[in-house]
Length: 115
Image 1 (cartoon, rainbow, N blue to C red):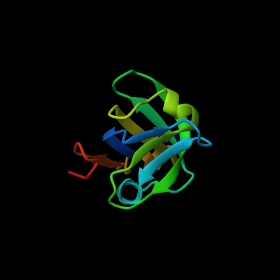
Image 2: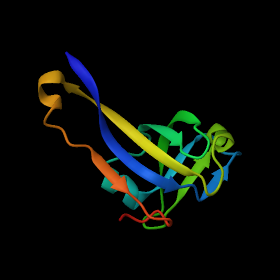
Image 3: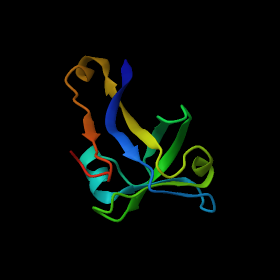
Protein backbone atom coordinates (compact mmCIF):
# COMPACT_ATOMS: atom_id res chain seq x y z
CA UNK A 1 0.00 0.00 0.00
CA UNK A 2 1.13 3.53 -0.78
CA UNK A 3 0.48 6.69 1.22
CA UNK A 4 0.91 10.29 0.18
CA UNK A 5 3.28 12.17 2.50
CA UNK A 6 4.42 15.80 2.61
CA UNK A 7 7.59 16.16 0.52
CA UNK A 8 8.17 19.92 0.48
CA UNK A 9 6.86 23.00 2.26
CA UNK A 10 7.65 26.69 1.93
CA UNK A 11 6.06 28.35 4.96
CA UNK A 12 4.81 31.95 5.01
CA UNK A 13 6.13 32.96 1.58
CA UNK A 14 5.11 36.52 0.77
CA UNK A 15 3.53 37.17 -2.63
CA UNK A 16 5.77 39.61 -4.50
CA UNK A 17 3.56 39.95 -7.58
CA UNK A 18 0.36 38.68 -9.19
CA UNK A 19 0.06 38.42 -12.96
CA UNK A 20 -3.48 37.71 -14.14
CA UNK A 21 -2.49 37.76 -17.82
CA UNK A 22 -0.26 34.70 -17.67
CA UNK A 23 -1.01 31.08 -18.51
CA UNK A 24 -1.26 29.96 -14.91
CA UNK A 25 1.16 28.63 -12.28
CA UNK A 26 3.27 30.09 -9.50
CA UNK A 27 6.75 31.49 -10.07
CA UNK A 28 9.11 30.64 -7.20
CA UNK A 29 12.68 31.80 -6.57
CA UNK A 30 15.02 29.08 -7.90
CA UNK A 31 16.98 28.99 -4.61
CA UNK A 32 13.76 28.37 -2.65
CA UNK A 33 12.79 25.65 -5.11
CA UNK A 34 16.14 23.92 -4.62
CA UNK A 35 15.96 24.16 -0.83
CA UNK A 36 12.43 22.76 -0.81
CA UNK A 37 13.29 20.11 -3.45
CA UNK A 38 10.72 21.40 -5.95
CA UNK A 39 11.10 20.85 -9.69
CA UNK A 40 9.95 23.07 -12.55
CA UNK A 41 6.38 22.14 -13.52
CA UNK A 42 5.87 20.11 -10.32
CA UNK A 43 2.33 20.19 -8.94
CA UNK A 44 1.95 22.19 -5.73
CA UNK A 45 -0.86 23.12 -3.37
CA UNK A 46 -1.01 26.81 -2.49
CA UNK A 47 -2.78 27.94 0.68
CA UNK A 48 -3.35 31.65 1.26
CA UNK A 49 -2.94 32.40 4.97
CA UNK A 50 -4.65 35.80 4.62
CA UNK A 51 -7.84 34.64 2.87
CA UNK A 52 -8.02 30.88 3.36
CA UNK A 53 -8.12 30.35 -0.42
CA UNK A 54 -6.59 27.10 -1.67
CA UNK A 55 -5.46 26.09 -5.14
CA UNK A 56 -3.42 23.55 -7.05
CA UNK A 57 -1.03 24.66 -9.76
CA UNK A 58 2.49 24.00 -11.03
CA UNK A 59 5.84 25.65 -10.37
CA UNK A 60 7.78 27.91 -12.73
CA UNK A 61 11.38 28.69 -11.87
CA UNK A 62 12.11 32.30 -10.94
CA UNK A 63 15.44 34.11 -10.66
CA UNK A 64 17.64 32.67 -7.90
CA UNK A 65 17.89 34.69 -4.68
CA UNK A 66 15.31 37.19 -5.96
CA UNK A 67 12.67 36.27 -3.38
CA UNK A 68 10.13 35.99 -6.19
CA UNK A 69 6.76 34.47 -5.36
CA UNK A 70 4.45 35.43 -8.22
CA UNK A 71 0.91 34.12 -8.57
CA UNK A 72 0.03 33.78 -12.25
CA UNK A 73 -3.21 33.32 -14.20
CA UNK A 74 -6.24 32.22 -12.18
CA UNK A 75 -4.09 31.99 -9.03
CA UNK A 76 -3.70 35.78 -9.25
CA UNK A 77 -7.42 36.00 -8.36
CA UNK A 78 -6.73 34.14 -5.09
CA UNK A 79 -3.67 36.05 -3.84
CA UNK A 80 -2.44 39.61 -4.04
CA UNK A 81 0.91 41.22 -3.41
CA UNK A 82 1.79 40.97 0.28
CA UNK A 83 -0.37 37.93 1.06
CA UNK A 84 1.32 35.07 2.91
CA UNK A 85 1.27 31.59 1.39
CA UNK A 86 2.02 28.03 2.37
CA UNK A 87 3.28 26.09 -0.65
CA UNK A 88 3.19 22.28 -0.38
CA UNK A 89 4.15 19.29 -2.51
CA UNK A 90 3.45 15.65 -1.72
CA UNK A 91 5.04 12.34 -2.71
CA UNK A 92 3.89 8.72 -2.70
CA UNK A 93 5.71 6.30 -0.39
CA UNK A 94 5.27 2.66 0.43
CA UNK A 95 3.55 2.66 3.80
CA UNK A 96 6.39 0.67 5.41
CA UNK A 97 8.93 3.33 4.35
CA UNK A 98 6.86 6.46 5.00
CA UNK A 99 7.90 6.65 8.65
CA UNK A 100 11.53 7.20 7.60
CA UNK A 101 10.79 10.19 5.37
CA UNK A 102 11.60 13.73 6.49
CA UNK A 103 10.04 16.53 4.42
CA UNK A 104 11.96 19.62 3.34
CA UNK A 105 10.33 22.41 5.34
CA UNK A 106 11.58 25.87 4.48
CA UNK A 107 10.81 28.94 6.58
CA UNK A 108 11.33 32.36 5.01
CA UNK A 109 11.54 35.93 6.23
CA UNK A 110 9.61 38.97 4.93
CA UNK A 111 11.85 39.06 1.84
CA UNK A 112 11.37 35.34 1.10
CA UNK A 113 14.91 34.54 2.14
CA UNK A 114 15.52 31.28 4.01
CA UNK A 115 15.82 31.62 7.79
